[in-house]
Amino acid sequence: MTALGYKSPRSAALIIDELVQKKILAKRSDGTLQLIVKQFENNRTHARTVNIPLVGTVACGAPILANENIEGLISVSIDLARPSFRYFLLRAQGDSMNNAGINDGDILLVRQQNYAENGDRVVALIDDEATVKIFEKTDSAIILRPKSTNTKHKPIILTRDFRVQGIVKAVLPSDI
Image (cartoon, rainbow, N blue to C red; front, side, top):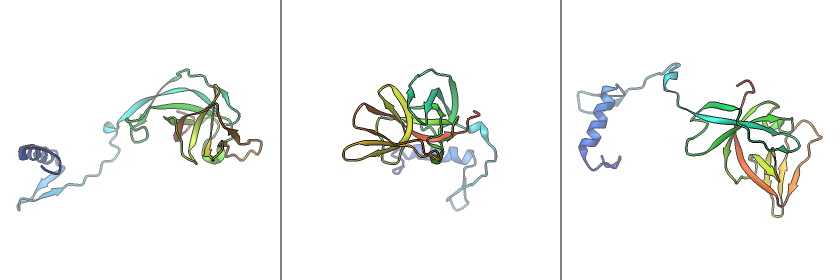
């Protein structure tokens, strides 16, 4: 009762009784409780998802004009898209991030936020153009680094006209 913050022992007892009825706990003959461990195989009826909007394409190369056109909604597990944050999906275009696990056509799950830590894969808005790069902040500049096998991609060095739109939290296959 105290550990759960209840004011009445009856509240805790009701919860324990419900767990016993659902066969999660078992009461032993000596009055103690035993946790019953179950294997849940392919139990998809309990999957919890949220619908995340696919809002367009983002460049993995030179920045392209940011166009927020919702192409559709995709159900994503709350294990990936935690409900306490806002998310959106973008389709990657280009090869400047292929060494960072982002290939042309991949779907990026992006947690919307306006800050980043060094090493984060960010969706950056430069003027009105969006790109995906590795974020690095120095004393005098922000560096957006490509991570690619293609040597034509170079870092973008900024001091202003820059905003973090979000952090890439997961890379999903292009066929969803």
